[in-house]
Length: 67
Image (tube, rainbow, N blue to C red; front, side, top):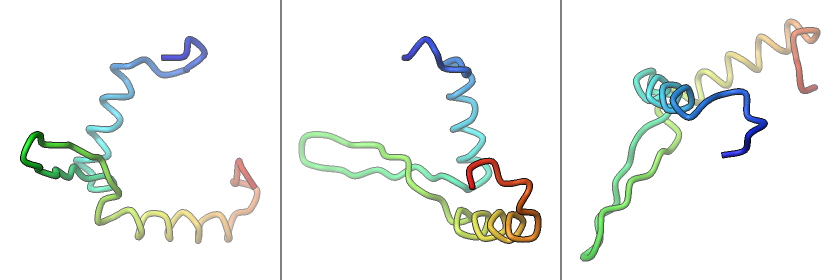
């Protein structure tokens, strides 16, 4: 991991776990004859949250950090 990162490995792991619990991310498994692969994908609430964030930014443009 890059030494310039502000988050430690444990903090990143906790963040991903929390996003899975909050249904912003989800775990998916694909099985083959030789292996099982695990993936993290967008969860069922991701679209809704992004739409809410977009509306908030449109209503408060000064709050946008990356615009």
